Length: 302
Ligand code: HMG
Ligand code: MG
Image 1 (cartoon, rainbow, N blue to C red):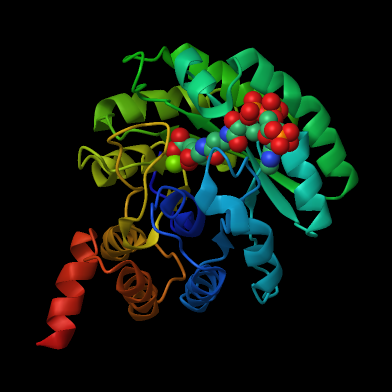
Image 2 (image 1 turned 120 degrees about the vertical axis):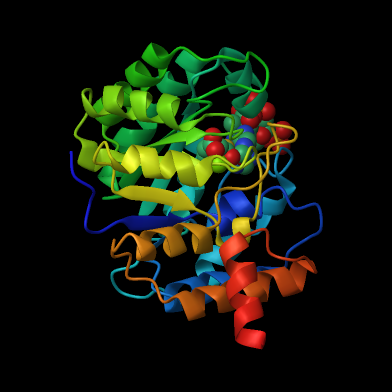
């Protein structure tokens, strides 16, 4: 399989990135971040989550964030939805794309959604059918695909089976996630080869957290299987509240830098992407974890 000539980056910073922040990030900051990302050329930006505010307080403002973002034509602003209650909020907000999530580990499923894997996938049938009545596009996630913070190793066959089920129930794309960033390149590539045999590779996405510094190597490895959709988070923001110690997603700046160097088109303007990272890091009073962003910003300043 040859490498893709184009890659779509799904920016998850405003949701996956910010959901774990202890300090309150005001609506206007989230809105500005989303708009800066659009300006940088991102075409799909996960803007928030309709989950329980008791479970993830940072996402409680998601309806307001979605309302205030100036919607640009041709851009998707998916919102994470765990159940029918979340879908109803998405419908009220006029959301056009939602993202459902399930886990390949029983313990993680319980910790993250208070139900078993079967219960979470069982809910999807009704959620999807109602979402389809509202002409929504539906994306799916599988967490813990390369390892679980509670159970350790995860059976690849469970990941493949769940991916197929999310695809069959109506997800146009299934994003397969290394939630705690433990996977390494050969393992990631073997899994995605298996996945590409289960559903069309054009409907797969890779979602790697960078806890162990393996995300870029893993992305490089799965690109060889034909995957051309990569999730990432500006400035490497984030972590999962139900995966203690897990750090953020791979930084969008690092992914774009690598893909630019490989001659793979992302449509992203690096300078504007850096601006988005500087903006959110300025608010959070934090240095970017992105190695590429740090290096490029230093070079610009010199
Ligand atoms: P539960 O407590 O079992 O829910 O939580 P329940 O149905 O028993 O309801 C309890 C209360 O929550 C009720 O309110 C409901 O109305 C309310 P009360 O009567 O007590 O006032 N409720 C809701 N409120 C707002 N929005 C909703 C909603 N549903 C119920 N949608 C639930 C079950 C799924 C809601 C909860 O476990 C939850 O919100 N979990 C989400 C956790 C989360 O957001 N995790 C992070 C995102 S996933 C992730 O980061 C992984 C990913 O990035 C991929 C990867 O890297 O692996 C996607
Ligand atoms: Mg994630």
